[in-house]
Image (tube, rainbow, N blue to C red; front, side, top):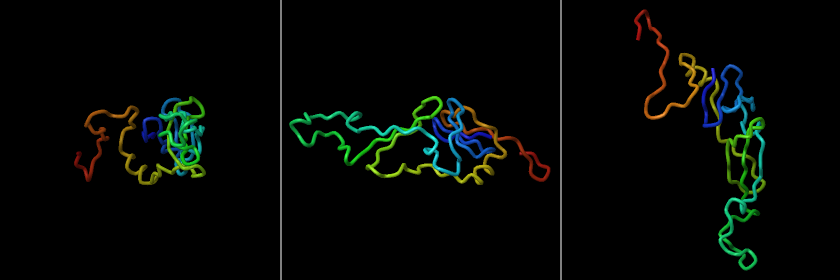
Amino acid sequence: MKVLVTENLRINLDTELYECRHCNAVLKSARDNYKRGLLVYNRDPREIHKPLLDPKKYARTYSPNPDWCRILEYYCPQCGTMMETEYLPPGHPPLYDIELDIDALKLQWKDRDEVLVAPTGNTPPKRKAHSHGGHAH
């Protein structure tokens, strides 16, 4: 059973591994930080947020100082899809932003159909029919 986690990331509950939703690449154990299975590009923040003032004339240009801020971009190592971006101070480890209770997730999804495409609108996913004590619900 595969469960959608983000726009680009899913978890395979049978193997307990994160996967890329675009190319099916296996990324990392779902009991670990998925970012450890991705390629990382450490961007100079001035590339993204161009200085508004001439840096030759002004010390403060309204652009992030690379001594204080870095932008990490995470990519699927197989297809190159950007999976995540984060702003961090230099030297700070990648954030552990998704930590799933795998055992609870397996219980939650054991009677559900696999969702291959994220639902839109406010229609909840359909559940498999099951019975309690001989009475169908």
